[in-house]
Length: 297
Image 1 (cartoon, rainbow, N blue to C red):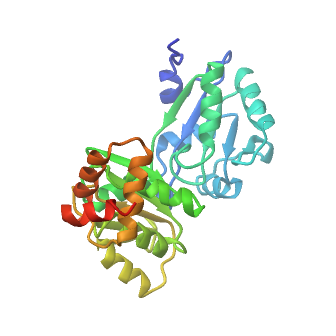
Image 2: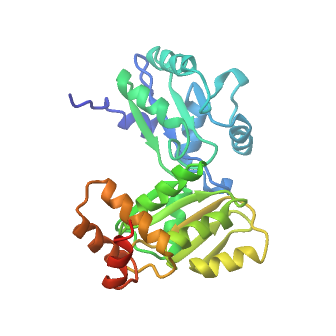
């Protein structure tokens, strides 16, 4: 069954809110510079009955900056670990005709934050939803990178466990899309090393502190950026953009790497001949050497 929103055009533009049905406003907030607030965002935050915030301290700074008065009871905190009862409370207010604004700590809600759960629940309830667009770190970094923007993949934060982390890197390694990663400054060096080992020495771009005072963009090969990162301390919000797979051959590998790759392909029920072709297409290895390695498995 196709679900359609009720017409919220007048709501989102003129804020003539309906009394019989509340609306969820998914609001993008600044990723650093508060001057990036739109007039529409300020009007929306002023007019809604409640604000759902991932970080109440952050939204308070924004409200204070633009002299928006909201009593403490009108700001609902919501994090990834919040109980289902919190979502139920939010839906109850929407169903009672209250209008709510959903904001994340920064940027567009639901992008690498728990806001998507509220959006999903609201859709299932048939609650009208609209978006107040605005800043986004991933797309800003993508544009700053200079890499193709016609096809890109937002990877976000990689899993923390080593096995799942490696699986995710291998999963996206051979996709021909520009890749966008989020990472903390403390783990950036590790991520660059991991990607270099699997991707090869691709072009990349580190964008940090976008829109803030110390905004910086570091461009180069993964190996060059890694050397730069090792030479000094990196702080702030980090977005790493890496060019997509261009059929470049992996040159830094061991015989054991080839054995593991071959065994992995065979475990997926890929015929031996096809598996050998796949490895040839990815690694800088001659057919005889590859055949010799495969016979040892």
